[in-house]
Image (cartoon, rainbow, N blue to C red; front, top):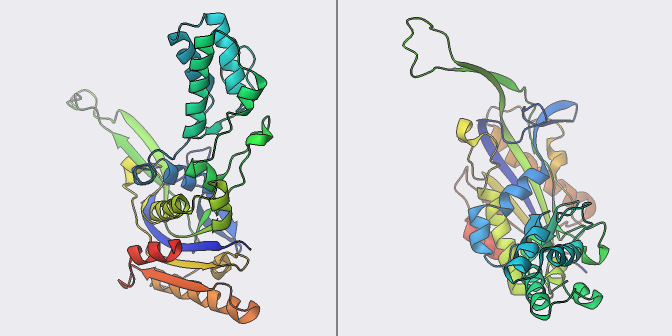
Length: 344
């Protein structure tokens, strides 16, 4: 039976534009009949994965997402003395393992998530082909699926439509972050002045713009299937625990990068409830189906979250074997203890 780790976060952001829609305005969603501010799960995962914090913690165990891997292999073959035509054919074959190639191009059609071991294996194969002056065999191409050591692939999965043998089931699920209260997206009208304009002949601004923004207290939910994660990492439980700790720290400390220079929207989570056990996971978002309207918004949201967890327990029985919470509003608990709790 799988062991699940669930993280419930409450994070407050001052006026900001964390995650923009196609019109450049903050993303929203209707929930409980009210407009809520939203940050997509894709935005959250991307910012956690490429953060300095996560990259330093998981150095050497993070993959790359790219369409251009064939170009890297092609350059390696050329550097090893392979003729241009052969280099292109062989690089296309190697890159094609990770996805269907574009017509007359070294690029593949979809972004492929490639682990460090797979990158090394592909480049080692290119070196061998150059030394033996021959094309890769089908067996050699199939062997490029190396032992899985990329924690970001193990956590968030990989789907290659044209190479299903390389697919990886995600061990971590991330919900869209949603404001616990209703919001109204406002507009910031701004102007910029030309520093060399002395105002004698033209006193107007040189640029006029408009930017949407809103402030919100977000509820975020993360579910990690630790059993699946260890399996994805070929049984390496130590690496799995390091990945869980790094992900949790990124989730509580790393903010989306949208409009950071305009709003300095950096925040740590104000409250985190961690749960672990073999019970089927469930989000606590229903706690905010009715928007929080209290003046003390953070405390009211924390109380609503804890009450919903208790009510689920009353109806369904204990929904977790153990829980641990940190509360930065009250200064209770510590992140180090929370990290130890979820990786024990």
